[in-house]
Amino acid sequence: MHRDEVTEIFQQQAASYDRQWAKTAPIRHCLHLLLDSQFAELPVDARILCVGAGTGTEIAHLALKNPGWHFTAVEPAAAMLDECRQRADSEGFASRCNFHEGYLESLPATEAYDAATCFLVSQFILEPQERSTFFAEIAARLKPGGLLASSDLAADVSSAEYAVLLRAWMHMMAAADVSEQAMAHLRQAYANDVGVLSPQRTAEIIAAGGFALPVPFFQAGLIHAWLSQRA
Image (cartoon, rainbow, N blue to C red):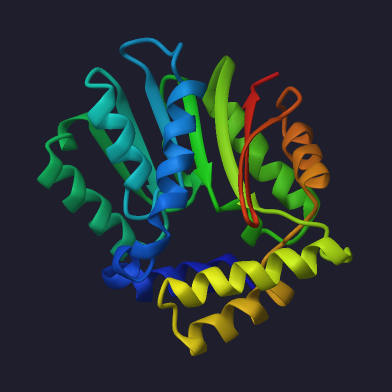
């Protein structure tokens, strides 16, 4: 799937996105809890790059806990970015945010960032070299030694373990009131439109983008997260 097609899907889902996934929020909350510990040593005035910011959930979490931090939200789906901006306005941290509608390569050059987040984004890039180039673009925006917290769906899809994980994942989706139609779409997307690679291969791709050995710090079902440092 071309990235503009992915963007259009999120454009259409923006108004209902948070509501649709509300019952899976404990996964996000746990990820954010662990993210706090990974970013605990950042400066009090840290600058954070959020790639694929969506509706701004991780920015909101980090902004409310760190009143001196500033954020750049990069999001190609205009409707999703509007939701992010509205959240920032209503929760009182919009003055510490820069909102960029577009992809990372169109973001104007600025002072390097202390850290970046990139949650459930690179999985939509199917070609491994292109995926590493994506991570290299993030690395180029970070200070030397800058941190990247990233997550993606990851599993060895040829293994017996994947079948067990996928079945459990779909049961979780059903319990979260995800519609049968949406679940069928997810199954098709996982097979054709999402680059679900093994955790080891995903870490190798991140490292090839200019990061030191990515360290896994979170897993919930098919979602894995890594902390990496710009090499």
